[in-house]
Amino acid sequence: MSKVPVLVTGGAGYIGSHAVLALKDAGWHVAVIDDLSTGTREVVPEGVPFYHGSIAERVLVDSIIDELKIGAIMHFAGSIVVPESVEKPLDYYSNNTVASHGLVEAAVDGGVKHILFSSTAAVYGAPERVPIEEEDAKLPINPYGASKLMTERMLSDASVAHPFNYGALRYFNVAGADPKGRSGQIGKGSTHLIKIAAEAAVGKRPHVSVYGTDYPTPDGTCIRDYIHVSDLAAAHVAALEWLTGHPDDNLVMNCGYGKGLSVLEVLDAVDRHTNMPVKRVMEGRRSGDPPELVAANAKLLETLDWRPEYAGIDRIVGDALEWERKLAERNARG
Image 1 (cartoon, rainbow, N blue to C red):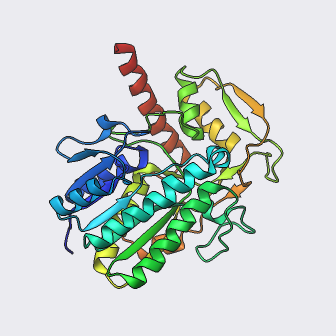
Image 2: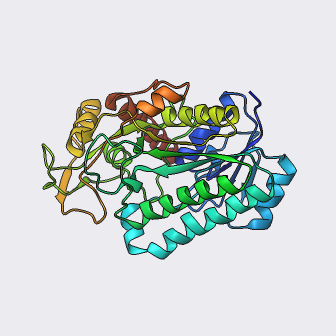
């Protein structure tokens, strides 16, 4: 298998930075482009070429592809906050779909052979059944999911007309931090439950808001499939290896553990780690939140050379708390 140079868009962000670490650990040559609107330069490893800019800057993207002879792109750059997408739909279609169009066009013109796209379980909307299988209906209920689904369709159509293959990994809820402490979620306006709960546990927040206690679930709160960010990053490396080994085929699959936990069950796990219950404030539902999202992950397990190393909510929460304590100590030192 040939390890082509890889450009990681959004590689200074939460998931992108972990993918960079996983690629580097596996011996791939990696470069990062990030506009730092939500990313942090310090989580990009030393020695990895970094380009400060947007994927919408065509001249910059063209120059990177040409200069580094990029053979594959991992595309993480984009906006990801569901409620914000409801409030600012045009921003999401611009940032997630239009900008992705420009990136794919640059990749085609530059001869890039493989594109791996960061998609989402939000493409399924409020599913009729769980676990959700890849072939189930794609009926997104918010602009975030719709903008990602449009990019999936664009990649599918473009791969028929042009000589590249693509993968779309539909994430469920990503959480945790690098077990070696090299990266984690910095948290510029984060809406991720475990990040928020970890911040509350170390005193950075007064409480955790629980949005909706009247869903049709056992305890009334939303159920999600949480996957450790380092396991997800490893799945990206395995998916890229698959794409390079199957140049005539594409790959679309869910990324999750196939097990759901409610908001209250996650908060119970945080409390177990801290022995000091985090304050919970019950609030109304947020717009665009489906009651339950759990992955059917048979395709992931059967197709890729991948098995989770960090599964389990206690491991995920433990790594998230360790990262949060590290950030708190660093901030205390100034």
